[in-house]
Image 1 (cartoon, rainbow, N blue to C red):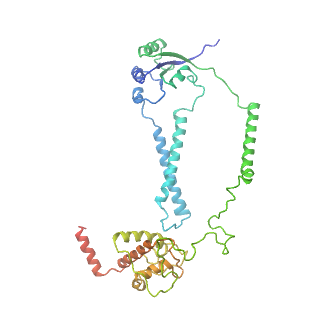
Image 2 (cartoon, one colour; image 1 turned 90 degrees about the vertical axis):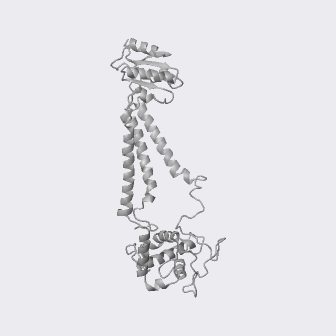
Image 3 (tube, rainbow, N blue to C red; image 1 turned 135 degrees about the vertical axis):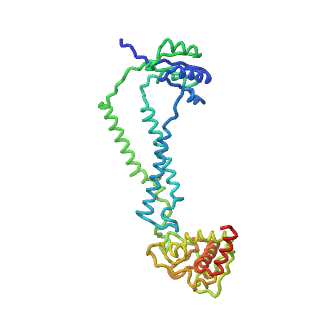
Length: 386
């Protein structure tokens, strides 16, 4: 009968303090090939085992940063180089909009690399034939005991000395662990190949039936046959064929006062600007101007469209005609539209339209500053110490 090869010796302890003291003693005695097994993590165990900091964090950091860099570069190439699009007046490289995707790809690559790196480089793949698996020692440390195992391959391994050391440290049980008999399982057996073939046929057949037949049968097709219209879909119910509807003419929202000059090209009078020309109003108007107006009028209202010739450029907002317009007339044009410019009443609120008017006035004054304006700016700069 072939003698079994010894894997090592294990010892069980019944309290966390005893296992910590035992690990410190074994580490100080120079044992290298030993391991500790506990039912839950113990504070201070890393220091007792004299373990060096894990390098797994470097793998996580490298792949996490790689994911962030790849996401940003890919979105920059797609949205700024390969197919640039103006979306709501935003710049081509709209970093705030790219952050969610960057975050997701960073977490994805960092997580996958951590798990894969841990299993491959650090654990050298899990071993289902490890000597400790199935032993009474492993059953105990998986429940309520704390254990140490010292491998026979350790340079200082001596069965008698280690048993004496374990007894001195207060062990409640010592167990000798042997390597299990090696078992081989040939892969290309007829039964195994037949089993894989049956599984493949059942999986493929079931998937095909569910996706191509079952989901088209009653009552499983209810998600597909909903009484709804997707955006831009033609309607057979309405005479004009439009599925996307606008509010019925004359509809007034509760608490909202309709614009009294709606639809008039040249009304006899205009509304007065109810928004004071404050710093807050100007900054708010700048934000809305850059979003809704700058694609056609340019960032400074010069009529230098940012749409690269896709639409005719509008006239400058710094002409004498526009500067002499009352605020209410500019508001009227934003609300009703003019020539090929559409109405922006559905995209902006009343407050936002008046704030845009205020910002246009600031642009006009900045572009056509007088000597008194310049002197006033110098006085303010001197007062602020600039």
